[in-house]
Image (cartoon, rainbow, N blue to C red; front, top):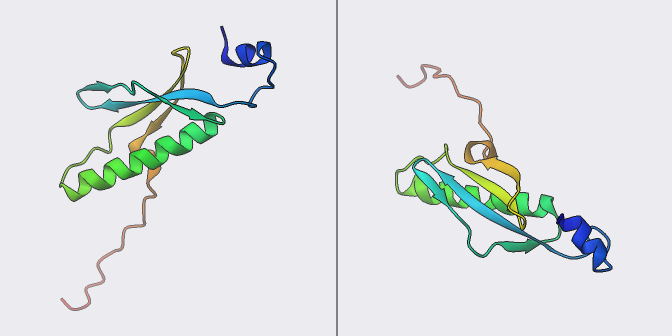
Length: 105
């Protein structure tokens, strides 16, 4: 049964109560499933959490000298449907490359 339909049957409007989403890590060599999930007011909030988690994991990996920018987080609803995918690489802004000016050389 669809999440929105279940909420309506319980007497709530869509978006009136938190929805459980699971943020599964898609790694190079497999999937790490989120066994507990989290309650979010809407999918946008779950996506924002996924972006924050991806950035935090990448920062930790970079400090350890590892590149995990090819990983992703799948956002899955309580029925098991994939609702979105956040690629780690998409969570960072690419800065312009500064050309060497030859100064000091």
